[in-house]
Length: 554
Image 1 (cartoon, helix red, strand yellow):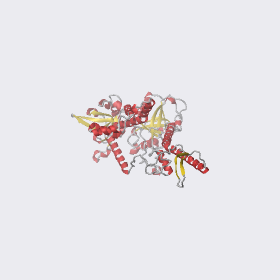
Image 2 (image 1 turned 90 degrees about the vertical axis):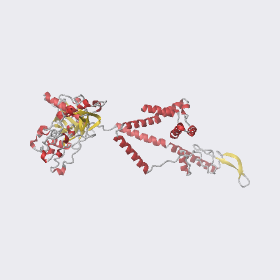
Image 3 (image 1 turned 60 degrees about the horizontal axis):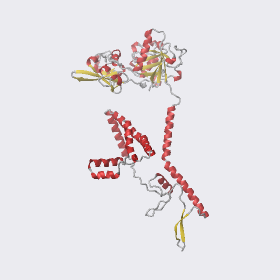
């Protein structure tokens, strides 16, 4: 991610008018200067002072002419640790180095030994090509000086360096011959090729020979293309494939082959101590044009750059709000799902209070609150006894009759079997309530295996055949269904109830109708029975909700 930034100050330009370019940081060396220190080099508008912050207030410069990519030390051809390496010429500067030839950390280490205060590595199309020097034989001559053929070019990688889905052109062989891919040291000749493979005009061969309806300019964000090395022959004419080049920020990963610390043998001489950043081809074109423009203008003042960390708020309010909303939703869901338990709990408490009061009254001989029920019954001793029943307690019914098998009547028998409150209350009393809910299947290891197989197969088919549009369709269907259940259906139902319009709330189908259709046979009967078995009773509100929601999703 581009967590760093570069402010470019033109001569006689105030700090507030700087050109800001985002950059990605290196995985080696020190952290970039803090955001608050980005202007510490200014003593007055348009001039730079003596900044003690690394990477701030530096002048852009270029590598030595004989080592344009700063890979000479990695190849063993130069040694910048010597005093005669020109260190003084790079004091208070940031070297602009093209990508490719060696690792990022090797480039940063060479820039540091040259005396630079920072290094800016920029992406290039040349860095995506190389020559197969391992194919050199003893009789072919030196690998760095012999001539190479087009068959010895190592071409860019599909999806790694380019993507034909974002722009593809077939360049005729006559136009391809104008390009150079075998020039030493790296093969790709940027001075010759870049003008033919980048830009928005027809000078870009990909713009000129793109045969898609959308066009290369609209599809390829980088406006650059890479020749892939693939070719097609049709009607005796050979054409070479070129596709849209990726131009993204990359992480400057460290080089594990560089000895560090005690392994270096010189007290950490190989440790990078200057900040390093990476910019894209598009960004480098802007900076290079500015630097070269000022140099050719003959202006005595130079461009000044500040390399620093991008601003990061100390407190992320959006993250706090998202966290608070998530906690609130979780609390609300748990509170609403436990509504039945709270109601039953209150009923149990009220019943216990009532029973305690009844026991006190009976102990005190208080008759109030009891009523006679029916004629008296024999008490077995020649007398009669009346059945006396206390009034029902609040919240729970007691008038449910016992079943024909003589099941004991309880204070919870009035609750509907299967009701959540009844089950909780029955559990609290130690007596069971038989639920009428159907049995539910439990997940087994085979369910997990089946899910993994189906999901993996779906993803494999999705990405192998590149049917990414299916994801959008499935996402639209899911959102439309949720929209119908959460918003449209409740809104229509509420409107019908307020208007006292019962017609749309009635079922348009019934079990009897489906059964008669199934008995009648035929395609219509089978379809009707299938719809009933699948969807159950359907109302006009259900149909209207689905039509509105899926039409909106479409």
